[in-house]
View: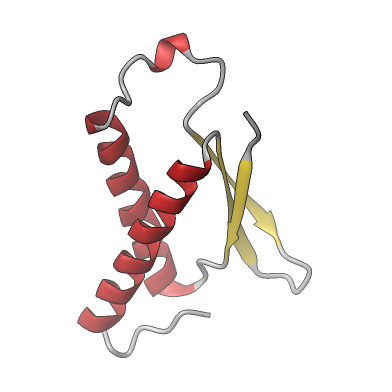
Length: 94
């Protein structure tokens, strides 16, 4: 199985809040959708690291072991970012 890595610019309040909420929703989704048994797998469901982009901004690189998991996470990410921006119209995604 090949890894899927997504790099997100989560700078600013909207991005940070949305990112944490998306990670939380993804973890709950994995638990409900056969996430148990993680001890038997040779790699974690996802790995997150903070990286410095070429322009100096801090981004998050999320590596998934399955493309379906990456797709599901992106749905959570987009939903959370949209929801946060709707609740805080002055919040800005950098």
